[in-house]
Image 1 (tube, rainbow, N blue to C red):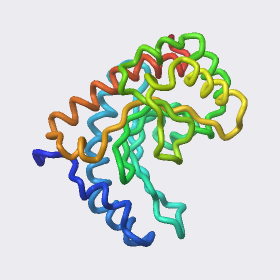
Image 2: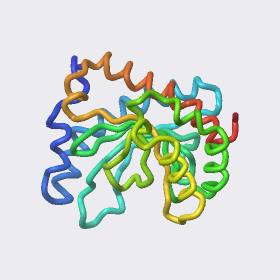
Image 3: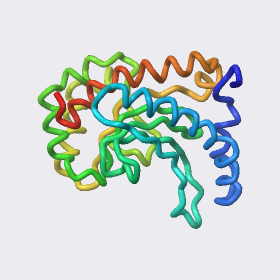
Length: 209
């Protein structure tokens, strides 16, 4: 394996014009890396003992015009489909890499999830200062938990209960420069550490805690 897992030009894929050209670059350059991460972290997440996890590399198969602005590998306890389940993701935007646990709008238990997280809010507010939250997986923007505080997190969880399209994401971002500067071993350790911090949150999300 290469010394550096990510390169700056991996992120440049999202600047390529046209659906066909961008998809070709994703398939040749990014998806093989997602496949490696998928195999490694599906095993690691399965070892946590909640469920057997399976990797899902985003194919963007339904797109016919607009090229994808981001891409990812997701991890969920289902062989087919993951969007209706709480799931983990490692992915890229043009500006940064993200490692998150996600509850997106297809999830049928958003109210229950929001209630469980609200009851154990410290599982989120005591995460390291670099961790972020977001209410929309379609946008690259996020806010650090440190900056938004308990009130900001509660507002996102309240919205998750009351707004049909609301979502909740929590995790960590790495700028493209930071990601490209990490050796393969450093990045794998960073991702492992991130998942280790997010697994207790996942346990609350699924009602295990």
